[in-house]
Every structure is written in structure tokens, then in C-alpha cells.
Length: 204
Image 1 (tube, rainbow, N blue to C red):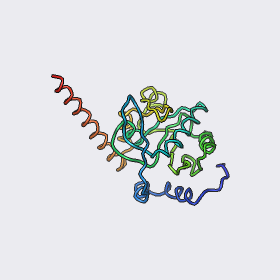
Image 2: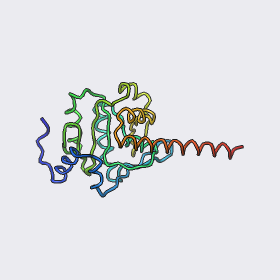
Image 3: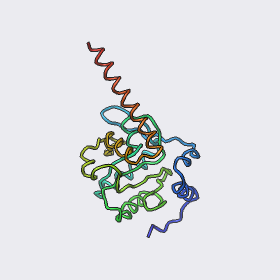
Image 4: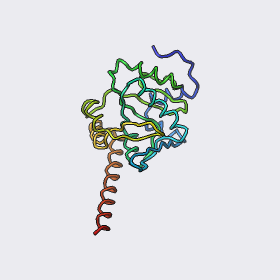
């Protein structure tokens, strides 16, 4: 049974939004989120503002303390790799069987999050976090974890699904928004390739 905690009006609204079409829901959210990763001295895209960083990294640290392995996946992960874009929810691939979902939910609630549904919590700043236990089109968690890249969020190291794996998963899922994301990723990779070509030419 979910924790018996009185939900605020905002969280009740978020619960309804999660069940609705996510694309339409995003058009009703005015706030843009900005979470700035640090990886090898380079800053990628943005996922939440400075307030969000505290709540999100607090959750990550709590899960890691419990020995629960995780990876950031989906468009959130692509943004952390540097793909331009924004998103208001963060998808975390959890290395647990789906039946153990309450173990993760209980950790999140202890960190101040509010229960929305079995796989979703709203952090104290109302950012939605979706816990995923199986990812379409990919190998096992362990196999993908070995290829994950590491980013730092104010001292918290976060494994992030490899960009090639993000593409593979989105191709396998094939929703309209996944095809849009694939084009964004392709454009990003094309720009990076061109930047490398220009640098090589300058060295000649």
C-alpha cells in the first residue's frame, strides 16, 4: 500500500497530469527546468533549476546509500550528454525487479517526495521523477550500466545511459516524441562531428 500521506492540491494535479497525455501536459507547464551537469569540464543541456538540483541530487544520494543502482535514461539522459533541449520529468532506470517498487518509493518519501503512483513521485519542488524497471530495446541493466557515462551534480556522481543506447531505445519504442528526440540527437552528433572536423583543419 502507498504511504498514507495527505497530498497537496499541486500533487493531486500532477497525478492527473501523469495519467493524461504527457505532451499535452507539458504545454500547460510554464516553468522551464535547468539542471546543469558537469562532466569533464563541459556543461551539457539543462533539466531543472538550482532549487531542483538539491531535491534531485538528494534523492540520488539516498538511493545510492541504500545500495540501489540507477541510471538516468530517456531525454533527460540525452540532455545531460549535451543534446539541446528541456524536460520537466526525469526518468531513472532502477536495478530492481518491478515488484520491489515500494522500496524505491519509500526512499523517495523519506527524502520529502510525495507519492503520485507506483512508479512516479513528485519531489519537494514538484519535479516529477519516473522510476523505470525495464527499458525497451536494450540489454540488461548490468550490461548498459557498464557503458554508462558519469556526470557530477554538486558532488553527486550520476550514471547516465550511453547516448547510443538512448538512440537504440527510442528507435525501439518509436512514439512520435521519440522520433523527434532521435532527430535532435542526430543533429547534435552532426554538429559535434563538424566541430571536430573544423578543429582538425585548424591544426593543419
